[in-house]
Length: 311
Image 1 (cartoon, one colour):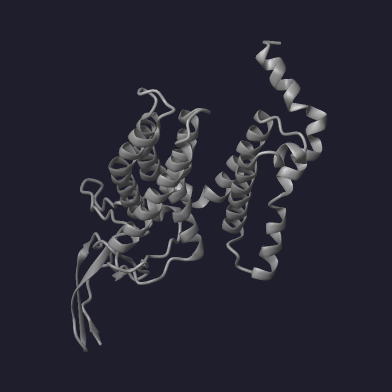
Image 2 (image 1 turned 30 degrees about the vertical axis):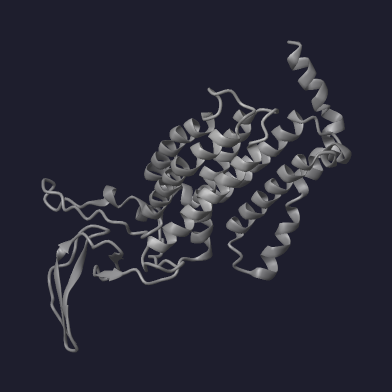
């Protein structure tokens, strides 16, 4: 097979796009940016992304999908108040919004119409920041080769957040207006207003720190879930198993944190060796058990009462 020979490409992410191909000839264009859905190979040719995402890639997308849901639930609980009976319905609605947004995002991604995506393999951190690696052959002219080398892990998160926001604005105000009778008029929509703040923050976070989050999210999950579990148990004055079992809400919070612990452990281990990594899940209840065994030495209720009295 004859291949059109041209000068080698400069830069880490510049490549040559295939212009013509038959049984005997391949003709490539000039060195430049690869089209969307392609990335350069070792020979500096743009190749389509045809691989399936790895388990770690799906776990990363799951983490980014969970962020708005967890924030929704937090602000719904924060602003609902004890007298409101609408919190449960708002929680369910937030879960419905994020779930539908995730399904629609997968359906509109390539290949369109199926709950499946094709992707390029993430090889290193710089794959997320190709705009920083545009070459300047003569130190004057810059060859712009910025493209999504981690297709579609970078842009699919933005699409998901956009659908989440649209669905929230379509569904939540109607629901809150009808069932949030226990709240004042000024408080009914505060959880929605909060979302209008945290969605732009999440978008900027993904735009600037997507690559860092890709490698750090398992540790972020573990640290935050441990801290929030300890804070919740101390604020709720849980000092023994009876205090934990006396309310269903506390059990739901505990099980939710255990799921987050397991998610973080699976993300770190990547379950490369199933027989070695699965026993690590036995560590999931350890933080809660450690807290219950040591609570009698710290007495969280006494610390909280002293803090309330200003001592």
